[in-house]
Length: 551
Ligand code: MEV
Image (tube, rainbow, N blue to C red; front, side):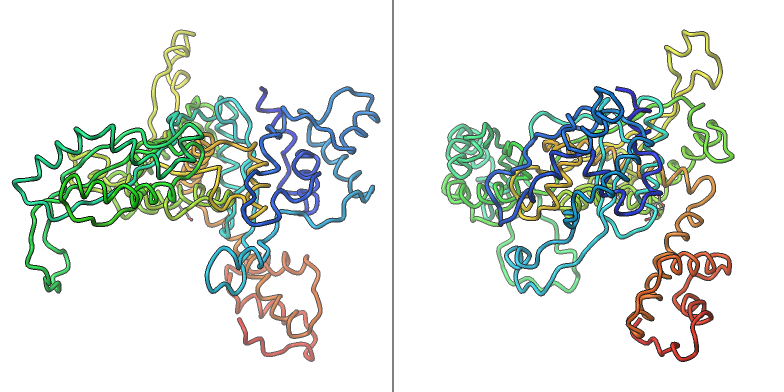
């Protein structure tokens, strides 16, 4: 596949209006957007979208507009690989034909569905959904929806992906098996009986696995289920909170923690793991004589390590007024700072999570679980790296290496150097079950991504994390991020300020006012609601200047 071809159809996407972008999606994904909402009720058992759709360049575009384009241009080509100009033609045509006036279906959650999802529901909250572009992952183009309120995140990640995909794109790997760990803790086993208890459990392993599998029969039917069990002895330590007043005289020094390893197919697996843990616990207690403690999944899932990486010649890294070599050196420096300073490492990882969380939100994933395990993995102790003091580290790594092939082609010096980036972390995601079928927006977003399975989704998300971090380091280490960020921030502030006046006067203001207020705030170097209000009031007749107090 030709990455440039992929890019050309989407270049300038950011300059289009919201409506034009939506129409471009309808044209690009006819199988997805030409049919009724993929989910209209709570948790239907099968998603109507299924996996009909594949990525844009390989999809058969059968929409009327696409066929019309082919006829008019006497071309047998469908939309596969069309360029931006052709896209614009189709978008205009779609608008002029007035084919589809339905509201675009990527929109907030119906409150009646929301009411069934959580307790004490009083409404819903919306987040913008945008598309990360230019991603080539394992040689396949991917368009990646992101739900995020922070300006610049999507522009930054798409810019980084453009650089990386201008060479060979991202390589990603994830384990074949999508598994999760269910934990059961067994307490109050006397110290001199612990060895015996562990041996009993290990001896009974096949029977325990068989017993446990009755609590995830559906998973077993799908080819998954409990496939292993391990036992850990955990030493107790004193309560860290000095105010603690012990109320139990028992003080067993060690606890047994049993791990049940479950293949959850394409599910995230949290419910399944907790059901198995609760179901199997009495049996484990009977075998060991231990008192049953907590029974729950672990959100640290080291069996789902997913790795994304890229390599790119230094020469392709040039950015703004910086040469590729300068950019490479500056990024390495920024990364090395995070390695030695956990104050910086946290921010470094936060930026990376901007990308991962946004995809998680857009795709209906448990982003709290993803966050928790990523930050745990950033700690040396959790990674099992005890050579260092217990430290918190950046999750990405960057380095420069010599490329043997380039060196063999008689390239010399910097010309045979490659800039490399890598991100590996445990990530628990699912594409079957959970809330994905509950909110139609998740299904559309999954469709735009090409309906990835759980393994593919984890790879997409880790690539996004790597690209997001690369983007942040590149911007921070060169021109800084505030210029680009401030433009969007100013637009948001101007919008908020203008809304205040709309509410008061009950009239809607043209959108170019927003841009002019934003531009003038930037010129003034003061991007605040107060400045925005002052600027708005400058152009308002006195009679319309009201006390805007509700901001
Ligand atoms: C802001 O949301 C993220 C950054 O702070 C990340 C970083 O500093 O690496 C820009």
